[in-house]
Amino acid sequence: MWMIQHCARDVLEALAFLHHKGYVHADLKPRNILWSAEEECFKLIDFGLSFKEGNQDVKYIQTDGYRAPEAELQNCLAQAGLQSETECTSAVDLWSLGIVLLEMFSGMKLKHTVQSQEWKTNSSAIIDRIFASEGVVNSAIPAYHLRDLIKSMLHCDQGKRASAEKALCSPFFSIPFAPHIEDLVMLPTPVLRLLNVLSDASLQCEEEYEDILEDIREECQKYGPVVSLLIPKENPGKGQVFVEYANAGDSKAAQKMLTGKIFDGYKKGLRHSEILY
Image (cartoon, rainbow, N blue to C red):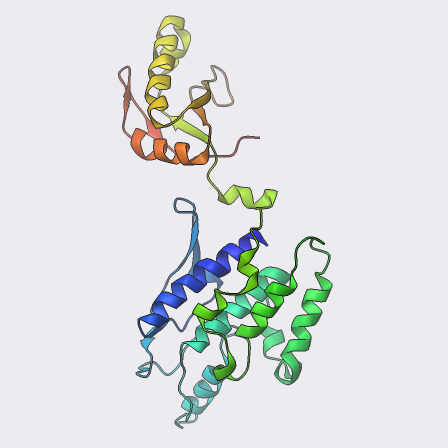
């Protein structure tokens, strides 16, 4: 639920900005939503089918399975050489996001479901059924707020579909969900791993090892309190430096500033913060 909430908010904010500028993304799908670990947010990418609302220059928009009903109709008419009387608007993006969020919650691809006659007849009942089957996610989590948000995006009538700006006001975003243990692999941690700092010779010489250790500690403390510092002399992790800060913010700041630093003659490379088990 943390990931769904995070994704929904980030993409809705992107769409609200895009739609405010008068543009339609027109190809929103999981593949076009990327996670940025550095900035801790989801990003909307690939504007190859985007168009200025009211000036659509691409006949075939959106990807099968995430295509709004009005876009589906437009595509069918275009194939028959006919002109659609209904223009595609920014509402097509909300439809696509609604399907993406429903797939995230259910854990299933819904392409065949949304193309079925049952969906066209009563999509609301299908959404209710999906949420009923997942009802025991956590008794403390009011999943119905997410259900109602998704329903507001999946009206067949585009005029009744929630706008991105209105969707951001959903009660679903008023509940601060905590990340599940599996979500933590997406987040930076207070632990920073530094590479290529010590040579094998430095590990063998106790005096040199202690000097470099002190040098690293002094430099790392410039970016926040260092809770602990470990340099294993044997595998696994031999010669790598693990710096634990009080919080992830300090480790991120250190990561940016320490790249390319020299510690007692040794230039080091650096990777992102990692979870230690």
